[in-house]
Length: 271
Image (cartoon, rainbow, N blue to C red; front, side):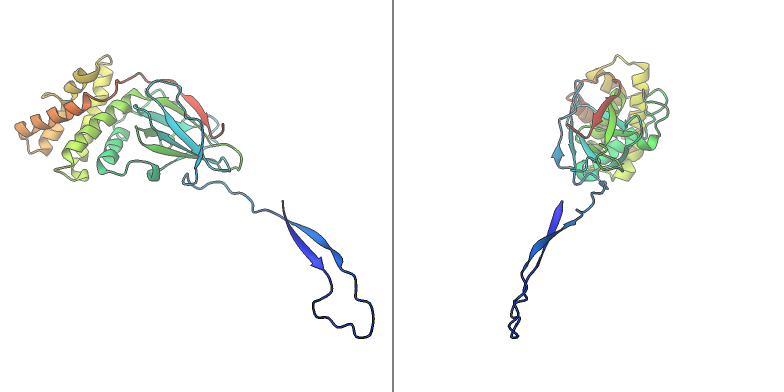
């Protein structure tokens, strides 16, 4: 508790010419003052207190940090696969975007947008049906999300799971965006990226056991809707489409193995 000291004594320069004794100094009086009241965090920009990484499963590591009030928790995906993050089971926490801790390049942002809008967060996503889509965050590698509570010392809490669908969708869209954005603006290429994430989702449903180069070659192949999308963007130039598909496939062959979606795990802004 902060204190203020007040001292009462003879005033400096006072003249007691009548000969009366000067009054004795009185002891200092200690007046307590209230400390500034802590307030809940409004974002995760002050979440600089490191927490133990969240890494309960292969391919996933979330670097976590909080602020002194524990009302914020910044989760940054430093693993190799995408995760889905939702609020805690009691919904005492809400999720907001954290662009200040996420990729800022157009290709990464367009790839995430295509994954979010593909339809992969539907009823068979493995998520509880009662979670509103506005509180479901796809967090690919190097992306971050911010969790906030409104009560000081009530730790922010989330649930998260490794997600096969959005991992595949983000890899495909990011690889294609990196190739196409050297020729086209993001808004012009966006429909082709979305077509490819939808094609990726469909292939995962129809052939869940496909992996690696075989999986991505099917998505980028001559008969796929994904190929038709970026071929149209390239003026239906078959040679250009072939070159683009080969270039993107070479990149995708180096991406991590697609591991199965897991159950939800809990993470709190404490120890």
